[in-house]
Length: 418
Ligand SMILES: [Zn+2]
Image (cartoon, rainbow, N blue to C red; front, side):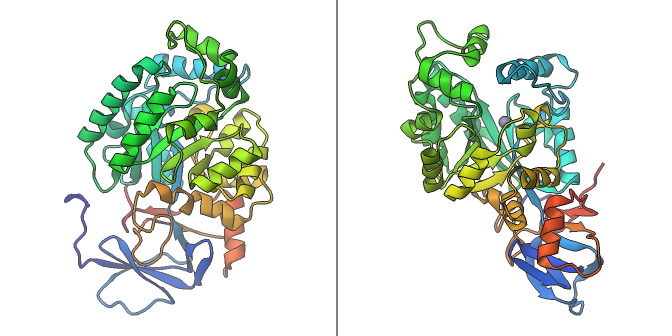
């Protein structure tokens, strides 16, 4: 905890509610939440005596863990939604153009707007792919917890050493605080060489930080990596990113990560759409987290077969908004509702787990994604329909109804929404 935000060790607050959802499997009807110094001390049925604690009566609201947006591009908030009509490579052109020409596109203000929108809709934690270097400044004063991921783009193998050196010095100078953590984000296998992945993976392991990467988002990526052709090659050449005589690695996207030693429990794989069944099983065995971004699926009109395969393989799933450039909302409740529609076989509990516990690998707080004793006091107060919600009904409503929280708490405090 920073000195400024630290709560006195003795400060206790008791939140009375119609019930507490500790995690997707544990519902305490009529429960109340006792916090001490910003952490959950106790969850119990009923409202006990004051015992010196300040009482905050939130009834008839229920309390649920704060959500975690495991993949954001906050610097694109002011760029807004970029049409996807002419394919993925052209969409990237639109994003780059927007970041350069739209006022505030790729700026700390854009980051700030996005983070505020996410918090108001229940995301108390987020992982931001910092593409323009504005993330930390834009998050200044934002009360939630954030993983700031330095994005690295350098497809030429010759650039690997230089880029790894830059990433190392960025990590060394990152002002780590309890609510800000650094991580590395090699952009994708079509923009990062195998030697660079390898260096960044070693660096992330040595510093014990997360490694987040887009993976196999489109079939075009696989084609480029195997044969060196297609719309993504045109894009990279246009932007003069490929050195003369560049040759593709001749591997599928997941094989690039495996060859570089970049696939493991600290790895976040974003999208992972173009994977075979066998590859999905390898992802599950590696312990990596796959971040599903349903809004982006809808934006590009993509099938959900990959998500179904990964789920059936037992891969750990988290949920992301992926930024406004491929989404029309920054709201993880909306993403939960979209995931339910994309993969109807997923139960409400599974979907809610993806939006909370799914991001546990980010290690943004102790007990992240739950309200178990010892966990950070990050929670939402929501007013469900009906007077006596049960666990099943509550989870169905949370994951289908896109509810708006009445109040959002980080470390037991409701931040200003201004
Ligand atoms: Zn992304």
